[in-house]
Length: 304
Image (tube, rainbow, N blue to C red; front, top):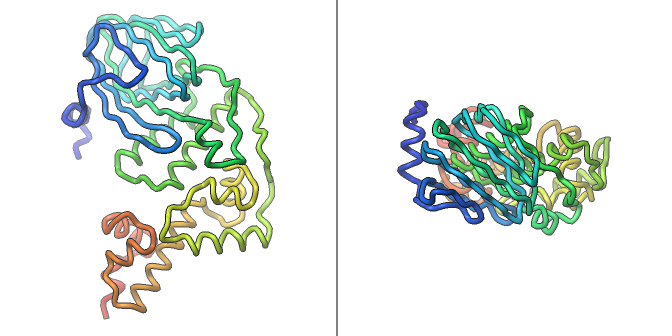
């Protein structure tokens, strides 16, 4: 795919539909195009492109919203989140905005505005429902023109993996949990979930490895793993890495590839059958992961 900004915009326009995201209104109407990607149960990603003309906008949603600007600048305008205002020029591709659930996000831009952004919706109540050790934060404050590089990097990574079709639940949930934890850290809010600053104990490690090995063919959620050892997802990810030397997603991928290696060398089942039986979405995903971990293709390993 071309790395040209013009090619990226054209590819977006080819896929986009002429509609406005739910809960987001532009005036004059019909100046935005968007692509919607649902990421159940916790949220969605929407890519939005706005015409180069003066406009006003207003948004209010019941989920937290992260605005990752992919391109653009504003030479004249104003944005406001529940009364917190910023006016004047903004280099949008260097900042992000965060709008807490239920907050009003509104503003206007002048004639020389160029705006394209990714809107990430996160429903903390749904996160808490699938992961009982996760505690939704009710007093989050808005962020306007935030320059935090780590938070921006997480949003860019989340956008990229969804664009690439890598919708592994464990990986996506890890990124989302880190997003919410980073917002809390920026606002110096405490994490009230159960925590552990050491390593996992022998019994905890055994429970996790047994669960993962028994679930390789199925969807494995970060919430399921953290619940086994009664830790918040954020703390679980840190303690897991400290214990196993890799992230939960990397460990799960390694186990799946090792199981696939065993089946390739001990059975005559097709590679596609093995890929599906070890939790991969298809042949291409399996092929990429196998070569990355093993250093050779699955077909090369099978050759006599």
